[in-house]
Amino acid sequence: MKKIYFVLMLALGVFSSVKGQEATAQDTLWKISGENTFLINQSSFTNWAAGGINSIAGNLVLNYDFNYAKDKWVWDNKVIAGYGISKLSETGWRKNDDRLVLNSLLGYKASEKWLYTFFANFNTQFTDGFNYTDNDRTLISSFFAPAYLSFGPGFAYKESDNFRFNLSPASPRFVFVLDDSLSNIGAFGVDPGKNTRFEFGAYFDAYYKVDLMENVSLENILRLYSNYLEDPQNVDIDYTLNLFMKVNRFISVNAGVQMIYDDNTILEKSDGRMSPGLQVKQIFGAGITYKF
Image (cartoon, rainbow, N blue to C red; front, top):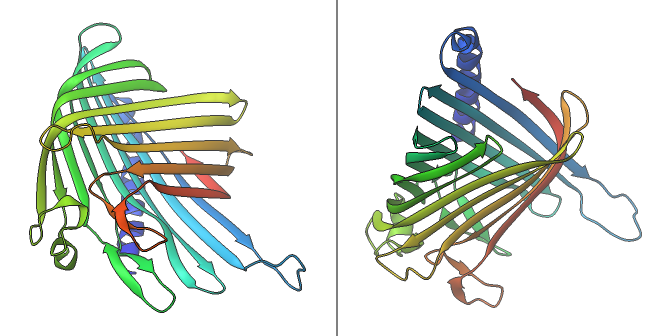
């Protein structure tokens, strides 16, 4: 819980700092924007013939953009922090979202829409993750276990803030597993007993957002990575689809699905086998969104 409190305090600090800089940003070349979203969904059943399980869930997502532009130079930065918990009447509290994502893209315009770029991407989570069985739970992830850091030169196409992609054909990637119990079993592709893994390959990142109708938009985020040093044909895939439905200035209904495939992430299947597999996360809820 201390980590959750830290995240909330960090979010409040970032929000206060950003608001304090808005007037200054207007006089400079920075464009700062962001949104804070709190979603909640709940279901309850009493003497319901069809059956059902009482549940409640809450999710907090902080999404900030810090973008700079001057002459032919652009520098786009995005920070996403998300955490969510849910409670079922039979299982108690468990998390349903946990992520910290930092993206940075420095570009120099080669033409109106093409740029020479250097990117950096970092991903991790805040708290421990577990695989639950009937009578026990097993640690499967933690803060900086894993964490991914990728960077490298490349080129990008930017039609607008709603459509862009970047390709880096020479991108180092570091995988960190700083929890000893996980590194000792070689989790997330590190050698047993090692805390880091080095990869070198090609990185592709694409973003596309479209307005389906008034106050309804669809967002697509795709990231691909191929490791030249080991099985380059096994491309790591991270795809997120978000649907945003705005009710009014503050109330929104959001739905999202994220699908990840990483050949180095070994999962326990329903039949007990351990092998790579497709990870799928779905979130749906209504709540409060504050944009600035």
